Image 1: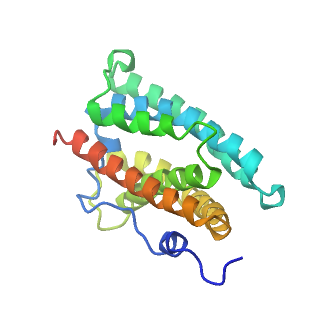
Image 2: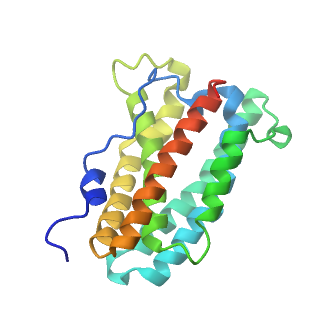
Length: 212
């Protein structure tokens, strides 16, 4: 094990992914964008499944990586069911939604990480970052000064709860372990992948507010 953690490992303990915007007005809470979120989650499923496969092949069984990631796969089933239930409640026709450009590009990016040529460490960094962005954003919506409308509290609690935060910490631990033993080349790829995730998140946020 390296004496000093790689830069990305150190930043994983220091970085807040929460974007600087109105706390309750998160893109996942906007009904007109529910269909875009649903499209993204469906594309997220095969990506997470590929991370699970990479974990099976590329991790130490004693660390429990497979079990942690398998929990994420199972949670996605409930997430898709939730979107369908909410769409029905609010009259959103998911089948008629056309993916917008930012969403298409984000989904293509996820697809590019599925192949066997992508190292487990690189894919794990992307998975950790995406899940952490979800959790941090909704956790902020639950803070006392967030001014979150009461009707959105349940939605915020779904992804901003402490259990999901603990799950994200488990993913961070996986990332830290993998980066500690990764080659310089893999660390460089992981750094670039993290930046790509953040860029796509910003584009998705701008899309949800009608910005280009």
